[in-house]
Length: 210
Image (cartoon, rainbow, N blue to C red):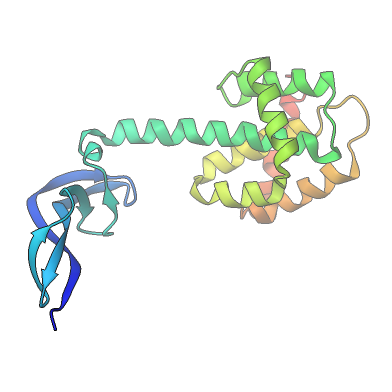
């Protein structure tokens, strides 16, 4: 009986140092290549796929595309900051939609929050798209915030809380019970102490008229 199977082999092609996005520091790396072979009696004899090169961090073992070698720490931090500001405005939109509607006053407030608080201006058209996606996807504010905030640093959590508080209280009418409940959950979702939470809310009041 002839034993024919497949096997994936990985070999190291080069070594060096790079900025690892997972470790957020300079680490050693191995440039590796994996390829699938047809085996005969467990011996690789014929390659049946093209080589797939990748970068592997020596510290966390995370695999990366070769392009990671061209990303320095400053560029990576800027990408992460842009990601945070996009996530923060989405959190604000979800907070506004807690009562399942959005008024013109709330739209204007969200536009100002994106510009003044988050320093990431968005257009009315983009805000409309975000609102439409949020309403049709059924995403819950607390689930979204709990997921994305895991990668936020403390300063970003303070800023996001400030923005969400302003979004929730932007309506000229009384704040709805749904929004109040969500605001009450933010302390635990963002893993803040009672003092930190109260301080951020108090600081937000000075921007109440943004």
